[in-house]
Length: 504
Image (cartoon, rainbow, N blue to C red; front, side, top):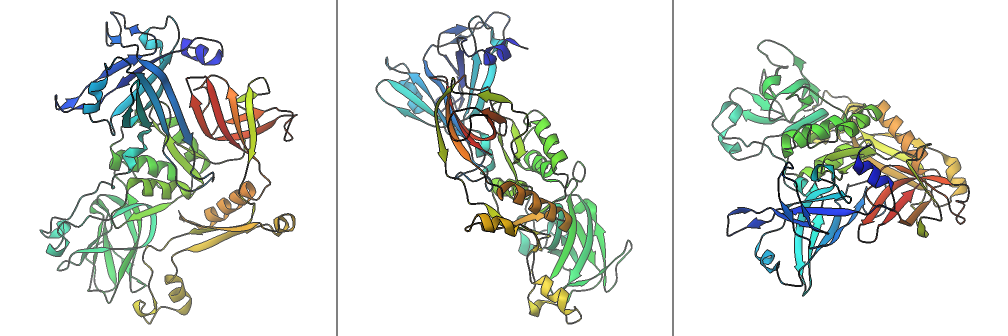
């Protein structure tokens, strides 16, 4: 174990903090690197950077809140973390900070102990500033994690309108479509009417598996297509028809293949983060977490992007399909996971010696039925858009955006008269996987569950979201101990307290 690991394991050890903030200074036209500490700290000559002073102005190193999901739910959109650090400005020495731009600028916090050299400090926060606030004595830096990087629109090229794969004149400036994983019945963009050239993805794909004209499947060929046929060009994300279509053209696609085709939720979150959000692989990613999620949910999903959409919507859609979540760890790396029942072996244990306060909080009603949508049709067709040769069953199917898999347990309704039916539309590709996921969620959310909020006198930064803790307490049926999942936490370095939101 490192000195940092020993420090985390010792609840009585003195803790020291270092902070580096990088606001934009308009006078310099670039960012400034400002360093603070809670005790005064200078790096050694052989440190990087050497002989550097950390001004002892840090009053509160870090108070930070993180949740897997918003609103106390265990599904839906992942939420950013928020927090604060405060600096002593009683002498007015930091008044010049008011003239700098802070929003979105990098903030890092390190934790160490007495006698630690710089390299022995451990990084406990890597995120961004939201804003700063002043009073007569203090400067408060409002913090958030790096999820702000996902608030921007997804990066993709636009058509130049010069013909060929650059599109007809009418497409000038229009963003190109994107396909990730297995997608069905996506609306293809006619980029070159003279050549009957259509595009489904901005870049290379695995293949176009099927093309439909008014719901009628065309035959796939490798040579020049004729009427009733199409030819795929995976390198450009395009296909060509052999004759003018009678109506709406849609396609089944195995999408983005730049760097190799992938189709699981974990792999696609990774792909989108790297190729569309500028994340570095592997430096900016929690590789072990991605591998674990891939092993837990190795099922195909698919996502089609036609209109402008923020990256956060894409990532939410992908992880929601498998009951997953994503966020950032303390080192600022993108990490992922999946909501599971608490593990049999706890990662930490707490009893009345550490528990300062405990309360039961409301939980959602149990569900007795879980319906999951899968095999999404990204362009539905009403009766007028379907060819007369299409049979009635297929005609009805083409009008529906999703097919559904269901898992239910009527016995739950006997115990819980207000038990609910949960319906969620997902981008799962296959019926068997949707059925398995529906059964998994029914087992999770159909069972009787408890939620607790526990305030602990313990050293911050030793636990993380998604871990299992064991709580022993003489109330609430916890005397023998119970394993619970950490779904939220607030860490207060000023008083060495951690408040955990637990579920199980």
